[in-house]
Length: 269
Ligand SMILES: Nc1ncnc2c1ncn2[C@@H]1O[C@H](COP(=O)(O)OP(=O)(O)OP(=O)(O)O)[C@@H](O)[C@H]1O
Image 1 (cartoon, protein in one colour):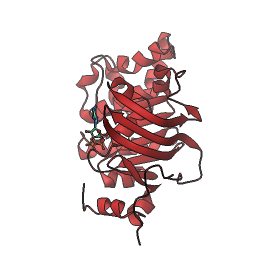
Image 2 (cartoon, helix red, strand yellow):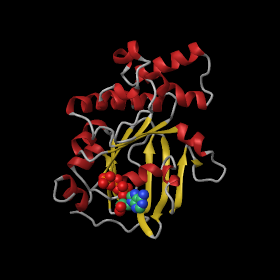
Image 3 (cartoon, helix red, strand yellow):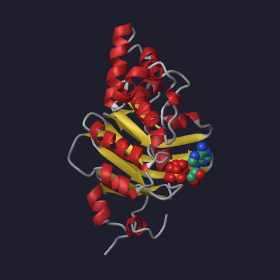
């Protein structure tokens, strides 16, 4: 028998017993007067992939954007509760948001390379952050980042060409390489493959599986097969609440909550 969704604020224990990288405590968010997140409690496991699923408008992207404070850029946003990265409150006034975003990188739904060369797309942020300056040092960093994103072999002979000259799938891997170049610890991905064809999607999924070894990854996806393929853990959101959070296999085969079951069996959403 299924139990009903617990009231807001009920704790959702972290699945798994690994190291917690990001701890979310009683997180609520309002856009002006409109509340979009209700008392979210969730522990993200280090060096694992966690998928965020749920029907359109349930707050997945809003939640994701809280983790590197991208919502700060939206006027009228108000956040309550806490998010702790390695135990440090990222909403503490002393936190340098630029530095936070180098630790918590982001990849968006539509590939968005800068209108610059492939090389510059990677080199730009490390130069700003003072991570690499000299020519050879930067060349190495560009190559390593492109290799980690599985793109080097396709672009090694045309690094001076515009990033926008690449295919959609290649552009998305360029954006992943760009995120990697500043050595983030966490990578947030907001539907990173939804604008791509099935072949490019498969390449991105394989890449996520490799990146998992070195990075903590959160991925928003509408595609439940994708969540099942790439994510060790899955969190199901509905109308701004976290309904269920478990290892992906349990979530898809034996969900605890009726709402989760209805969603994954296609009854709504
Ligand atoms: N910039 C914004 N200003 C005001 N309201 C917003 C803003 N962004 C999102 N919302 C609202 O917050 C709620 C959650 O939206 P969000 O985009 O986080 O959901 P989602 O689950 O990611 O949806 P989708 O799957 O369609 O992308 C929705 O009601 C949405 O209309």
